[in-house]
Image 1 (cartoon, chains in turn brown, yellow):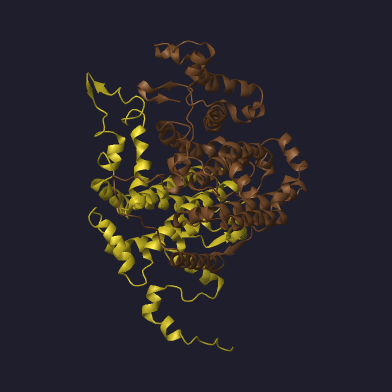
Image 2 (image 1 turned 180 degrees about the vertical axis):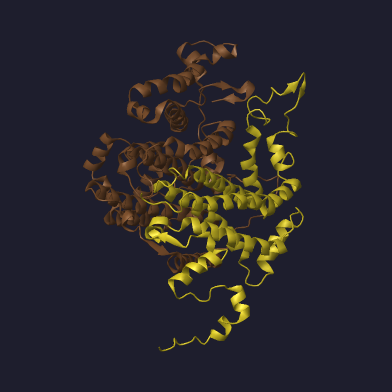
Length: 373
Length: 262
């Protein structure tokens, strides 16, 4: 096998979610600081410069050079230029651009408001006529969109594989790309959680945003300073748990849903040792050195206590410590709902870390009733 | 007083037929420009006047409007595709091949497929914009919820369409996607609590009665699934999404128009 050059090797290793995800999580709180104290660190690190013109150029050069460098590699090219994956490459650039674009306007507004002025949108309150000022703009947007679609359709043929054959399953079998975040969660949770409970919770959670966020400020203009907590929480879901997981599922998951670096050959023979254990096994067999008890409830007692502590006790502790101010702002009902939602979503990164660093498969494992958490 | 020069189109634009169709001619005065918005059912989606910041691309990114436009493109291309496509397992794949090889300059399937991808992306970006401008805040809370339903329906539309080419990509993507339905608590065979719905030894939730079966119309992705997804894709979901779109657009206007600083 050909030796990989060191940058490719480094990227291969780093892009393993095992390292990339904690790295992103660690960086995240400094890039989108939810609290004032983190915000001061954010300013001291000059991370707000990401959202200036220079920062935009930096991001563009960073992403472009990565993709251009990557395209020199046959494996990278194979995955990235696959017709159905092209929209996701587009998505990466579009999301990054609009992230930069909105944060730039937000910081401009924040500066204006710090000077006692109104946000820039307030300068343009005078009404204009919809004909021609709006309809012409829409017309141009429609034409641009049509041209884009036609060019895209001429250049890229829609994929069509072999005729359907229920007897031959491709490896990997992937869901449509917008569901790959859910499929990625399947690695860490059973289908009833990853495929049913979490999607339901996600939908209810998004719908609940306007009722949870009772901050009166920040309506109708771009702003970060006025709603740090809201933006930070949203970015966590949107960028980390939504876009990032889709990108991982699309580009970095190969045969048997194993992880493959962007410059790695998708070898079907790649083996990953499955040495995962359940919490109950850890407690009884490793710690207490005895066999698992027959009674399910006794066996899973530890797991139930952990779950109970996580959803029952932790919110109360948070209420008195880290989230004290949030609790005052939101009131009991909103705070409980928000905290439970937040803890549920954090259970994904927690479960990931437990798997990667402690090889724990299930906290509560009752396969007898398909009840595994 | 010098008379204004008449346009060479005047014989047409002043004829009785033209005036009966277009109440306002080519608008030139402020009043006529407002009248044209009020008298045209399509443009009347908009108010006649709008705050200046709201027509700027840097505020709206145009994403909501483009989503609607792509929906229309998908409707038109979808209707054209329906002429060539039969949702039967014997024919479906061959019809797609025919579409590729027999139709001259045919890019309808490409436009439909890439448009569908694009629509999912524009819906997401629209949601992102609405969040970043805080536009979901009162009085627009309910419309945000309607928007979330529209987002969900867009993904379902895309998901149901994914099966129709009836190739390996299609059936296995749907197989993977639908496996989750079988794990629904209580009503999926492999979900927790499925054994609870039983009378003595008779289990009510089994492979031929659970949530996955309802979705696929069978135990696996087959003939019935294809028809089911086809009907949902072409009639069922577009019907539902249009109802929600009507509500969404109506509420944008009724909740005070596009958001802006107070």
